[in-house]
Structure formats: structure tokens, C-alpha cells
Length: 310
Ligand SMILES: Nc1nc2c(c(=O)[nH]1)N[C@H]1C(S)=C(S)[C@@H](COP(=O)(O)O)O[C@H]1N2
Ligand SMILES: [Mo]
Image 1 (cartoon, rainbow, N blue to C red):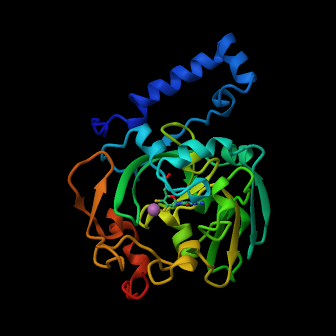
Image 2: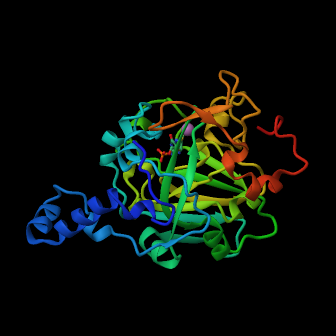
Image 3: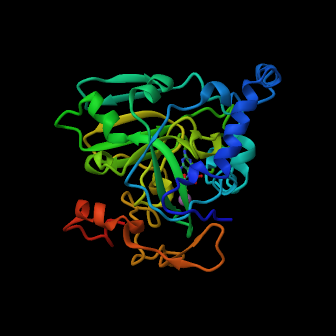
């Protein structure tokens, strides 16, 4: 179900947010802490995020319900079924966690996730997410621009692309015990795409820490590209000179290119991309060029043949 809300109320402030607050409050009580200490509850109380400011880059479309966002996922490290990540990702340990940023930079750094969350001011960004399979959601992310992190390591003049890597830990990521994809999952962006103000590193959603199935503790969100570009549970980011390999392009190059900008004019070889189903809705809606972000990002691709560079 979609939650309807007046444009002036952030969706994270209603309904599901109230549940989060209640859970947090309850964890602060003696019995709550006792249970949390016994490992019977997730450690939400310790892991709460600093306050996020509201971003003007948000869409004012109604957001999807928390249960939809956390119950219908693509995260092949935890199985290929939409409901499998919610079950299987519980085993993922997201602390300690570091993100190594290296390559063509003046200041290679390894960031501890908790200091990273404190270092960069958090924003709430409500974005549309369009999966290449033909469904979409509206998700209230919490995060900071990838550009902030990249500026902190000072890319050299040789840096042209950014390569991302997901954790490789088959003991906790049971999907990695199968050969359904080449592990670890890798993705990439051109440097100007990576530096674009819309490109987000998300550390939360609905005002709280990222659920494991959504890519905890830190994942990329590139709202004008098909969902698979938004790589989850990132441990490594490298600035590189040459176009980096990407998981879905390696798996099926005819169907998945490097750019993967949302484009209703370019059909997937096995289906049309002209329409999509917003999760929670019955009838399909039109897919917009660049997922509705054309005004902000189309200029990144001026002069490029987007049929060739799909
Ligand atoms: N590491 C990793 N990242 C991934 C995926 C995956 O299987 N593994 N699936 C992608 C796909 S196809 C989509 S549509 C989005 C889904 O994000 P969500 O589950 O948070 O909605 O994550 C992307 N990131
Ligand atoms: Mo997807």
C-alpha cells in the first residue's frame, strides 16, 4: 500500500516513523535493554542515526510503505526471490565495517562506517527507484552525496571512473555460496555521474539505519539509472582511469550496458521499458526518461547515442 501524505509532511514523520520511535523508546527501558543485550533484538538503540535535514531534491510523490521497501528486494547475495533478502540478510554482521577508498586519489583512506556517518551531514532524500524488471518504488533515503566522500580523498587528474565493490562473505551471504552471479557484486560510474549532486550514499531509510536487505550499512543510490546500478553493502570504492567491469554487464552484456540510464525508448531485449508498475498500485504508469530526472542529468549525456550506450 502507498501512504498518501500532504506535500508539506515528510513521509518519514508519519505512520512507520511512529513505529520506529516506539521501538526505540521501548529499547531504552530496562526490559528492552535486557533483551537487546541478550541478542534477541537488533541493536536499533545504539545504531540510531544523527538527525537528517530535508533535501529539496526530494520528489513529493507518495512514498512506499516500509514493509514494501523492506519486503520486496533484489539482493542476490541473499537469494534471488524478492522475499528472500528480508529473511536471509538477518545473518549479515554490519559492524565492524570499513569502506576503503583508493586508486587515483591524493589521500587514500579507509573510513570506519560510524565515523563516516558522523563526518558527513545527513539528508533525507525521497527518490524514485526503477528496477530494470519493470517495477518501481518511492523510497525516503537518508544519506549524503557521494561527491562529499570523493572530494575528501582528492581524485587525481587521471581519475575518470569510480568502481564499487560489495562485501564478499559467503558465510553470511548465503547467495554467494551459489554461482548465480560472479562475486563480489561490482558496479561503476563515470566520474561526472559519481560527482552529480543527485548521486547518494545511503546509510538509512525512513529516518533510521538501513535494514540489511536494503544494503546495510552503506549503499549507492543513483535515481536516474536502473536499480541494479545502486550497489549495496559497499566495502571498496576505487577511482580508476579505465571503464570498470560491472556485474550485470559481465553476466549478460547484450541486455545490460554500463550506462543503464532509465530509458523508455530503448526496450530490454526481452521486454518493453515503456511502462512500470509502482509497487502497491494496480495499473501501470509511463516510465519517464532518466526516471523523471532528465532536467537534472540529461546534459551529462549530450551528444551521446543512448541506444548505443544503453
Ligand atoms: N550487491 C548488490 N547490490 C544490488 C543488487 C544485488 O543483487 N546485489 N540488486 C540491485 C537491484 S537489481 C535493485 S532493483 C536494487 C534494489 O534495491 P532495494 O532492494 O533497496 O529496493 O538493488 C541493487 N543493488
Ligand atoms: Mo533491479
